[in-house]
Length: 261
Image (tube, rainbow, N blue to C red; front, side, top):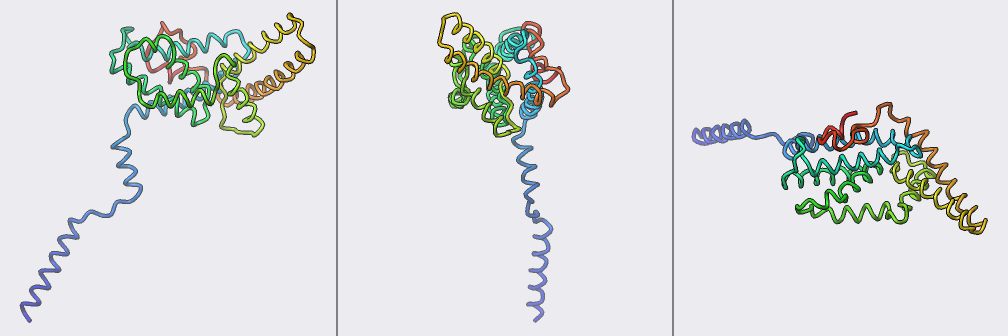
């Protein structure tokens, strides 16, 4: 009887000891925090800040569609992004690993911008990634790059057709009142300029009046959509354009072009 009582006390003591050292079952929120600490980097923060800043400028840029300065703004942005890959902050050529890292970061920004509906940022970044300056850089592209290019071409179309796919998609988004859709301002500007030149050429070449009228009707639809975006989306921010659009590429080659005004 005494022996059994001693054994029971021994077992209870062992249970208490195990309970004292046992770790509580992790909660879902704790697991999320742990995963965030393990896999979240400063680059992740940079990407998120960049997407936010670029989105604001995508709104603002729509107000410049049709203005003389618009092509210059687009050229600056593409040039600055290409410079981030090609050069360091001292103006020297980036080492292979650094160029590869910057290229990968811009791929992430482009992909997330598309998914978030910021097609202006996505389009600008795509042009930089495929610019001649970047193509001359010798480093292995990320495996996902090929898939991203196919995704972009499928969504926006090609230059020879004035990115008509994206223009048509912008018309659809406007008709369906898709508030998250931010069109590529440069594409809309390019479409307007090319369409005006095309109509002028049709008139000079003596094309049939019904053809010219048909082209004019189509262009009016696009111009009405552009006017809507210029009035509504361009007023979504009171911040000026970030340095990406306002500084010439030779003036600055640092990440701040994607974040600051």
